[in-house]
Picture 1 (cartoon, rainbow, N blue to C red):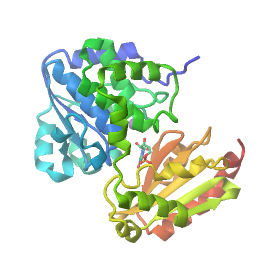
Picture 2: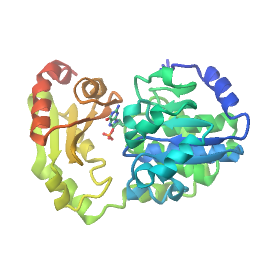
Picture 3: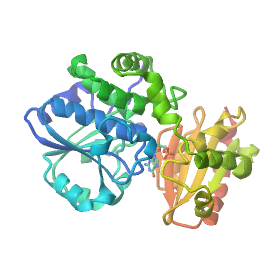
Picture 4: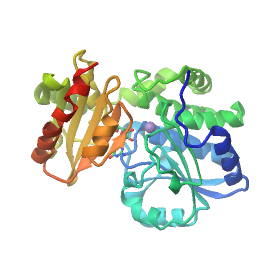
Length: 346
Ligand code: 5GP
Ligand code: MN
């Protein structure tokens, strides 16, 4: 039996959603800080669908997205808040409603947080992360047993009919689903993910090309940083079936770090049969960022939420600490014994 973790049923969602989109409006679609393929893909596709329905729509993200997503159809029209906060604030304040995509907690809105806290318009959530705070939203399509927010957006579009899918929307949604599933390697909860993708691939110009545009765009430095991370920096803690890779600011700049360059690094240690959890710890402007991945039932969401001001999904989560790299690594090592049994027991 397929279990769908729904806060609102789909019927309830569509009833409320139909009211919101009933009359031509000014909408803003907002996604999370450090936007990834699913954040950009779902936001662009959803905004393109709303435009087809006759609405004026702007997409805003808190900070810049990686270059390997810049080719996506419509990406050049995205407003990046920290590049032009005044214009973004004006867009937000002039909006009739706000669509929140691929995140569900205000702590993930970066520098937009202040504006959001004072924004009294309807907010609609479309997201697949755990522990959504429903009190913030007029309506929500919030399901955790789904590959990506892009898959949820595809469901919404298909609800209105396949005629709304075009090559741009299909391409954006495929990028979101492919990146959030690690090219269909994880986060597949039901066969519908593949039937939806089949429909998208029918419309998109070339699946092979989309994959290449996302994944075969490394700079030499990025690939060498990956090699260095695994060869020189991977710490294996067999007693916890855990691998830790840490990269300081100096190490990142040694490889001329660009936004997105550490994307995917955290997944490699899990390709070892013996590993249950992998952690990437990086030093960013003034904060330490954690990226957690796990295999099987071990929940990195709970660990990230309890100790690292973060969360996400059972098998992929993130968090941050305001401290030194040494203190961050010390804390990570200190809490591991609490999870030993869960990590070792398959
Ligand atoms: P990543 O490690 O790729 O940055 O993030 C993995 C997953 O955890 C993503 O789904 C992302 O949205 C979520 N995530 C990353 N960082 C945070 C965080 O600081 N807080 C919360 N709640 N979720 C996060
Ligand atoms: Mn996502």
